[in-house]
Image (cartoon, rainbow, N blue to C red):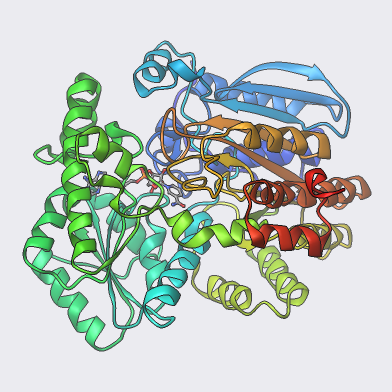
Length: 551
Ligand code: NAD
């Protein structure tokens, strides 16, 4: 029987599949489980609590085997991390179709999900874990950087210099916070209960130093703040204990947020439980653990509200901690906003979101060349230039070299077509996998996060991600995924993803042009429909057809 083992994607131009589309899916599946990339590869867990790339090792082996023999007119179907069929389709069809963690509405809760998971019938796919386009902590870095820039612009005259941010969670995604704050010239105190998470972020240069204790963390922070010197500080401890303590002591905090895995109460450590006992306690008594985790989250959120009342800028960073605190009976849980309505929605209206690509060659020089292409393509976009330069200097690659940058409607297709030309001309050593996060402008319904506080009240309408997946299938994406529960947990989100391979062929060019136009186009039409002026202007200027606006 197959079991845990180290997995690493092959590099170079030699194919072990029958074409680059299949090879790309194979390498990106393997890359998600590379120990450099995944948080717990032995358990097939990539990031985000228990977000997995495959249901079990047998399913992983079967997917690898199938992708190696899959023809150009065939499609592999994946049901929650297990390959369940191969169907004859055609060359414009995706090579892989993925549905992860979906449950019928009335059954869409953690209890039922875990019952089915224990029976071996499903898995939690998070967003890019089960859809094979996770690129390590960089994947969230630019979004986090943009969010903190927006905080700086809104409240601190455009810079975080001279401010202290307090947050928790240094996991796969949350680990981007310290670097995003220091890239904005601020100071960050980042709490985590797992010493390994702190070490890993220091090793990958996302985090600068580790404090000995709370007192030491505050001393380091205040000294750096006063010198207007960027610094990120890791602090070992439980956020539900340390935040109330810091609030009570009047710690000089300017910004508060959180990225612990609060979306899954079994991944949030309750106060009074040792980190070493967390897994066994959660497995033995999930109901008791959940109650205690929610009580702790209520204390955590109460302290965040306390900091807000004391004048700090406070926001939920998309992990459902307000919802969990409310379930524990804390009635001011939603006193502070989520980051999307507070800072990101105007970008979504322009079809902007986390566009990303990975070099299947394994060569860092391929990414350097694509960085240069992005700079050439968008000479007028200053913040994009700043980001690409900083990323080139400071981002440590995990697994296959990759890059992320937020691009909008009319931009992603340009970049994709240029990349495909670079593959065709031999400028790049091998093809690229071009995809994005499910956290995008038109691909997700998530009322506590991406669609919180929509202008027309349409927060929970989930037709949009379904249309998004269907339009990407119809446009020629290489693989398309439709998930439930990512980011914010069971019952709280439905979202879709796509990856399209630039293999240098004319056919790939045609597919890329359609997918990378229609995919962000979903963001524009979704926000036009909800009544956002910016989206209407973008639709008018860039020629996005919206039938209800045509007479
Ligand atoms: P992860 O599971 O890799 O890391 C979570 C970290 O929280 C772990 O290191 C864990 O030790 C720590 N932790 C748990 N309980 C704690 C406590 N009581 N005190 C301090 N630390 C504690 O998860 P991740 O991939 O980093 O994602 C974190 C959260 O952010 C998830 O809920 C995820 O859905 C959400 N998320 C948000 C965005 C966004 O753009 N805002 C994007 C992706 C994920």
